[in-house]
Length: 284
Length: 284
Image (cartoon, each protein chain N blue to C red):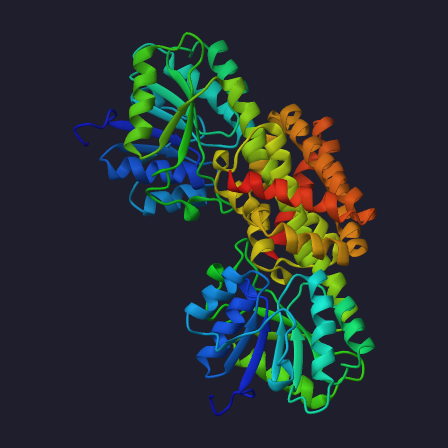
């Protein structure tokens, strides 16, 4: 264990892109890592890469023995996992100092953590380090270096717990942004969920037109890269944050309608104004 | 002049990203290049980079002395330039073997070329090598290496002229796709114009939500890179190809509405189906 690293042991639940990167980064710092993934293939891959000391079973028994618990499963599954985690972390003799998750929405899981009596030991995390790839094989050490990371402390969180969460992610290289969970969810509806929905929209429209991704130029390929993101993860995010995302999609629909209106009128002046405004936003 | 290169002299009208790259690539092959840009600053920059032998004035006098004429201005301005070009290229004593343009729409300029009596000497070109940057300073040699490039020969084009166009772009490294001009315009409405309009739409929606490009993660930044493209160029493309683009935007609007409907009903099954379909398209 590094002298400055605040944990000697950790459990990571979910070995996808983000969970896998956490495992690799923790192991590289000398932390003993226990791990679970519902897919035995992913779990075995992580074990054979030599970074997981111990595989947990689906009951997650033994969690109370580790100092750090990281939940890295899709946001819908994270709620059930948190219930299992809470039962052990809140039991007598637990050594657990911090429970965190890495989901893209933070309001619902924070509410559940408070309800389960974890307010003093839970801090929500959301690293902005996603990718269209997923699974253990897509994960890599150093994924969080330079990435923005939202930290959401529940009302009444313990200051030492928040301090541990800050140290954890700072050591992994992330740039921390501390924010209220509900404010976070509104913000990422715009900055992350909207772009994902629009990428999928563009892919589906092109499919309907009979075009493949290979038919696109570099701009179009960039715009559809995240259309290949995990359906499970994005369905869960969509349902969790539906109202906020719908508001952002309504804004996109209104802007699209304005483009169509200018095109149908052959209104070059209005079209130019819109492109100028888009570039001004880009150059901001 | 390279032994295999089919031209000893050329004139390039418009020294933006694409025109500039053509100038640099031709000069590198020993071609004497005359050039014009309505912006004297761009023209002077090209001259001082040592790749332009001779600056033309706005009348474009002297064009008939060169073997190759490349029109590289926005598609609306290209029509007026083609009229000036035709007057000289069709005059007695002209040495010009090939006139081409590099615009993103091909139907209208081809019709005008035929009308002006250029059918035997005109081939439309569309290199898919755009970028959000523009101007001489953004141009570079080798831009067309590996880039797809559409070639559109007017009905009744002369075979030797088409052969010259093929050799020109093949020497510059492009991968040629020969296609009818109208079919081209429908195709690029989907593969190029739609992604550009959607990028601008996303930028404008985010502006309305109060978010900057810096607030986005890597996916969102990729999706808005081409929102910074030249407003002049894209206004001209939009007006030229309005009906076809509007059809593609209608398809995007319908897909967006389906996302909103699934979100408002909290219909996880339908949402998942859509993300699965988007990923299947991506993986195709």
